[in-house]
Structures are given as structure tokens and as C-alpha cells.
Image (tube, rainbow, N blue to C red; front, side, top):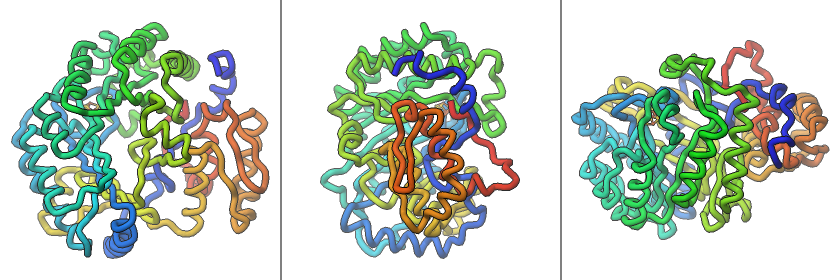
Length: 456
Ligand code: SF4
């Protein structure tokens, strides 16, 4: 589809606040007081079922950054004081031991992701200590996939060596935009040369998958600045490119209040930026993996899409092969298939719970049968572009969902009947809007006061 094929009228019509559906129910509908005993029981059971068949996934949140990128919506702590590393690692180690007590077998680690924040804020020696403490009493799955988010400005060959030796083969660099003026306004100065060196270092260390994150919709971005950025990065042949829409949520992200909102592109301009980027990526041999991800055909995500193995979680699209994701660290989210749990969002609360020897969970949700069914519809649409309906759900679907699908069908985004739904090529630009009619929590939210970023 080219830029003319997406009507500006439809872009305006559907540019409503809509969740990204990295979970269902979405985080605003989770309970503030998850019963920790209930979560432990769900975790124990899911661990027991998954560990000996698929293994488990681990996400470790490393929240520190040396400087604030003004577009950032992540949970981070800005500091240049590196003595914070020690205390944080001690807390992660204690949290891991609390979970180890719930595991009756040696954990089989299949997936491990270090995210942030800036994981490479930590010294190579400290990253090694962290990984040693987790892996020394675990079994590493033979088909393990270990990955890290690296900052091009501070990922050193020493970091890469430690990570490679621990089994990491994928690194994602936050590139975002290479235009100097855009970098100045987002306070993230990293010239192309830095990205080139970081990429070359990762390849030299033995990493087989280098991924870049880019953002469209940032202040001062133009069609020509996006074109320059994309043309420069594809020269480096990263295996994957996540081309994210900037989420403007100044009510939750104070740094975004620093933007002059008149510098932000309009919804129509944003979709033009996306379409220009997409056109260049497809021309360069990348495949559209869905929503905001592109990958070379050799990449695991490309293969997973063709084989229907794609999954969507808090990290976006993944090839997650396990049914248990354990999140460690401040603000981390765990997903046990039928339940979510999120850790305390401030370091103070996180440390306090850990020092009291209790799991630092502050929020979560146990899914009922209806949630599980509607979660599957949303995941299917986001990951496969189609879904089939259970006859047991038909009354609910007719009453609450089909009325929301009808206008989307009329606008040419999908086709549906009482057996299921399929997106059209145009619908792939509006996936969030096409998932939203299945979000029963949002539909029933009488107050309607929850806020999400715009769909485009
Ligand atoms: S974008 Fe990344 S590096 Fe920048 S402040 Fe946020 S977490 Fe830190």
C-alpha cells in the first residue's frame, strides 16, 4: 500500500486514544491490590507446567540512565552516580531467590532479556555478576535466546564480551532518529558514527542479530529527515528494525511536557512519515512483521510470522516460546498466561519490599475465562491478522463487539461473520483500532476516564 491508499479522512477518524494491546486486559484495568498468595500459587503451577516442557522466560529491568531523553515513557532513574549499581543488583539477587523458593525444580532459562533504562549503564563486571547469579543455579535451554537493549553511546566491547560469553546473541540499539536537530530536541545526541561503531563492535563480538529501534512522530521530524535516517541505518543491515510511533502521553511522562507541541507532526504527517519509512525498508529487503516491526527474511521474527508463531507482549512482537515470563526489578511485569503481576514502580517501594523479604508486587490481574477468550481474539488479530470465534462467546460478541466492528468493516479494514474475523491489507495500519472492539474492559468502563496514546 502506498501513501495515497490511506485516506487522511480515515487517519483523522481513527486517530483516537487506543491501547497498544501489549497485554489484555490492559494495565489500567489491573487491580491495585493483587493477592500475592494467589499470584504465588499461579506462578508455582505455571512454572511446574512450563519448566520441563518449554522452559521459562526472564525479563530483568535495569532502570538507570545517565541522561534524560525527553520523549521517554519508560520507567527509569536518571543519575550519573554509578554506586547505585551495587544496591540494585543485591535487590535483584534477593528477588530471584524469593522466586527460586517457589520453584521445585532447577529453572530452565529459554529466554532472557535485559531491558531498561539503560542496561549498559551497569559496568561489564556488574552485568557479569548479575548473569552469574541467575545462571549459576539454572539450566540454559539448548535453544535459548538471550537479548539486551544497548545504548549506542555506552555499549563497550567489554560489555559485549561479557554478554556473548553468557550466551547473548541479540542486541537492540535505540537509534530513534539521526537528524542533529531532532536529536537536540529529544536530548539524545548520538551521531551516526556512534551507531556504526556500536554495530561493528556487536558483530565483532559475535552477535548474530543487531536490532535498531527508530521512532516516527518525534518533534521536528520531516519526510526528508526520516528518509535520511532510514537510508543511513539500512546501510548497516540490522536484522530487525522496530519503527515505533511516538506515544505522546505528557499526563504520565513529565519529560514530554518539555516539548513544544507545535513541533509535533500532525496525525496525517505522522502516517506519511511511517509510510515513507516503510517504503524504504521494503525496498531494502525488509519484511513487514506487523504493527511496527520489520525484519530481514533470515531473522527469527520473519520466520515466526510465516509459521504463525509470533507473540505480542510488553516488549512488542516476540517469538516467545514459553508460557511463563518472569519479570525481575523495579516496575517489571510478569505474565503467567492466566495472570499478570507488576512490581513496585519506585525504587524506594521496591527496595522496601525486598528488604522485608516479600515479593515487591503492587498491581496485577488474574484472568477469568471471558478475559482469556477475548485475550486470544486480540492476540490473534495483532499477531496473525485473523481470529475465530468460540460459539460460547457469540451472545457477548453480538451484543458488545459486532456493533464496534461494523464501521471498521464499512471502512474496509476487516471482514467478519459469526465464525471469525480477518483483517484486510488496509486494516494492518489500524490494528489497534481493530483490536479495540474486543476490549470488554474498556467498553464497560463507564467512567471512560482511562487515557491511552493516539492510535496513529
Ligand atoms: S529513552 Fe532509554 S536511555 Fe533515554 S531516558 Fe528513556 S530509558 Fe533512558
